[in-house]
Image (tube, rainbow, N blue to C red; front, side, top):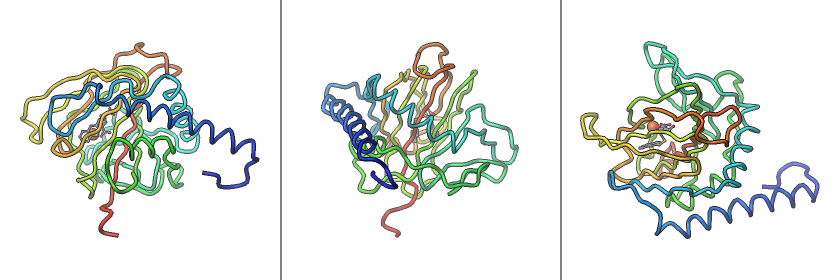
Length: 242
Ligand code: MD3
Ligand code: FE
């Protein structure tokens, strides 16, 4: 990832940092057979504590560096325009966005009108390691939960590549996550997600209804000022249609 003019020392430092993050992921992946796998719907895999504290700190720093250029904003509900309680931003070529006109993917940040920052290399590595999908992720949606923010039960179906899994990383305060089936009326199961947990939603679970009922304030020291950040990696376009 040595683009631009960087000194040898800078590049060596960046490389060592990257190796450290990859090693953290490798160890976590090695431990996967022992990890708790959620028995909710087929296709959901939860790896508790996939990222150790050092890897979590590195990711928070990568997010903070990018949100300076692509600040958090509040999406609005289609039609009503009611603002979300969750604040969002994106990394990658495709950013998920919502306003009165509906849900969609956009190439530019709605306020700065600039392209979204790149997806951190460590997250792309994680995607390939746990996602088992042939093409790279195109969107990293960043959800920031502060002050009682929550996310109602919904399906994610704005992507053409519905065969690709969604990979989710939880950082900061713990949250009560709820997942059901492909019908809104299906029975739901709740599970608490902690900082460093990684979930992969593939196969039948890709169109499952899910949401965040509440975030437990003060449960993690990771984010200065508190709150929870969720990173979801997605493939948006169908790689065979290019
Ligand atoms: C299951 N985010 O951004 S992550 C979302 O914690 C979203 O911020 C929640 O739901 C959060 O759309 C939940 C877990 C998640 C993400 C995407 C999924 C679960 C999913 C897509 C399909 C099925
Ligand atoms: Fe979702």
